[in-house]
Length: 420
Image 1: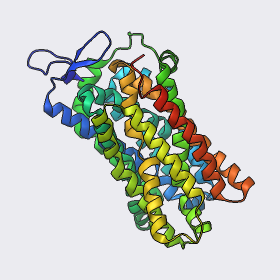
Image 2: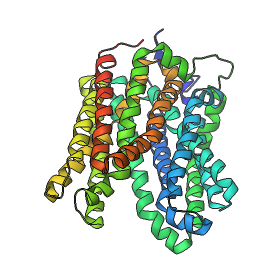
Image 3: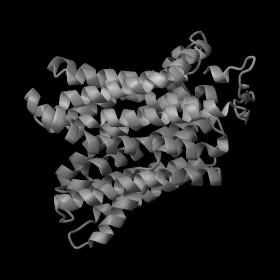
């Protein structure tokens, strides 16, 4: 950004050692606020946009003559696009700068959602892929920005607060999309969300243009995400661990309500309320885990603790029966959410600890290749185990058993490791 590039009358740049660690952060407070708000709003709108389509799946499928199960294909296609976006995040950031790239991510998502609203069957796959590509850029560009305006001892909290935009955006989609679709139709609803994404960019457009001029470094050769994974073994372990943690996270969100009905004996309304407790637990716990990571100075160990506790909660969820009291189910759901839905901010904070600040976007994108692969693979593995075992309980136990060694490996390799 221009505010980070120095010059007469401008804030001084971040002073870097040869290793890339920030020695001091003498920044314009206004600029810091702009970055924090911008990354948070992008996260909220991105989640709002991409998770609204599944909420409206029945209406969309009915109009297009498709089965509601197409929502599963939407998710798989979306995160395939996100994997592509993650792989190219470092190159995009070098080409246009982190600030412009971050705003560009929401414009790509808006374009994809607008194309989806066209209701043209042949446009559906490219529309979802485009939105997914934009979503894959959200976290890498945000990491590249936040690492430059956040002191190392506060990164866990700042990155975790930014990640609360995901449950907030998802909740907005759940609350607002159905009544809007009922009143205006699903196409107008999606177009309205796309328009909101475009309007969100407007207040930051001037800063984005200055960023484009000041930060563009297309001529500089830097390591890509895969190269960084090979170069930094702790980063590779962290990325591989995120595969299992992401798989468990998505299966919690996707199957818990059905599990509470089928295995816990709850009504659909009760199950929905208990499930909501998991989302609340995840939203509240994210910044708290970030605070703990900053207080201890060990984001890796904190992430390990979150993963171990999440695995334990998954194993307990596998034991759910109709004999459990409702209060116990609420506690379990809240605890499950406070662990398996709350690890992401600490995860991104640990990534930027391992690499140099100028490698943050590429490293985050490279690590997300594993994260999003877990999101795509987890539900398939869950469904396979549930089908073979005849219930959701064994499937939760299987995924928890997979996540546990991943969390332990993160603690062993990353928690005490130094930058590679």
